[in-house]
Image (tube, rainbow, N blue to C red; front, top):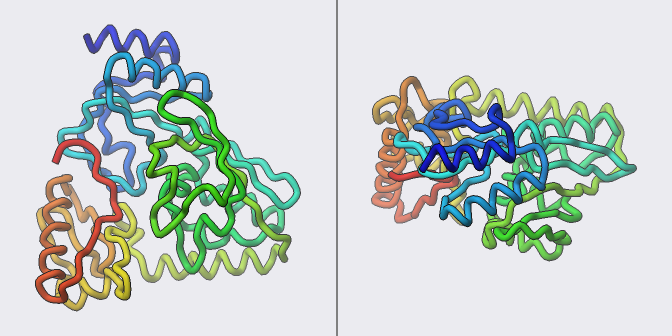
Amino acid sequence: MKQEIKQRFCAILGEERVLIEEPMERHTTFRIGGPADYFLIPETYEEIRDILKICAEEELPYFFLGNGSNLLVSDRGYRGVIIQTFRNLSGVTVEENKIRAASGALLSSIAAAAKNASLTGFEFAGGIPGTLGGAVVMNAGAYGGEMKDVLEEVTVMDREGQILTLKAEDLEMGYRTSIVKKAGYLVLEAVIALREGDQEQIRERMRELTEQRISKQPLEYPSAGSTFKRPEGYFAGKLIMDCGLRGYRVGGAQVSEKHCGFVINAGGATAEDVRTLMQNVSDMVYDRFGVTLEPEVKFLGEF
């Protein structure tokens, strides 16, 4: 059965862009994750539509993957189809004060294009280690800026393969959420509207933010970025630190000693190590402060 389905995908993509039992640790910033049944690398929207048609006919679950920066994949892998948009669907073009970018474009690449065009307003996103698609879905933000501040419109594909264009006011963007997330749409591309600025000031601001990240975040270790959402009225990292959990470990997973809001792969961590550590941390924070920590990291596969 798996071989027959593989051949159907190969008919669309060719052999070289259809991988079977692909280890997901190769595709997440956590460097953790078992094998995916099918790992597909489309290059066009038409290929994505054809893939979704096969998934529907074969009743296969699927997941769209950027560069895996906010993701914890089960040690058992993923029983379904991973559709990678990173790399092949990553074009970025500048038109006056607007940037049109494909879903697989890295936020750092978009920020660099904005700087080179002397456009300001996207500096906040330059150090977020993700792609545009994921950033739109979760309304990614940092240092006082959010995607909702700069998006003009987003082109998406629904589960039936229909392509829709949503204006900014229709995106229902809130803290780490959007209509794209709620409806299960796939982001294809987006238009980002910025302002003319001074290139040297933009460069300096990006340099400042980079230095802040390097000094405060454990970038030298594999992680999925901020592990927990910010509880209203609190900071997750401070709550964890105040519980005395700096450096707390389960197996190879560890609460970062540099920033308690990050769980890192300190060496050989499994997804189960991370999941157990996160649950233990959540329990201890709730017991001490009565505050519930919600994961910002997405779990994929069986846990």
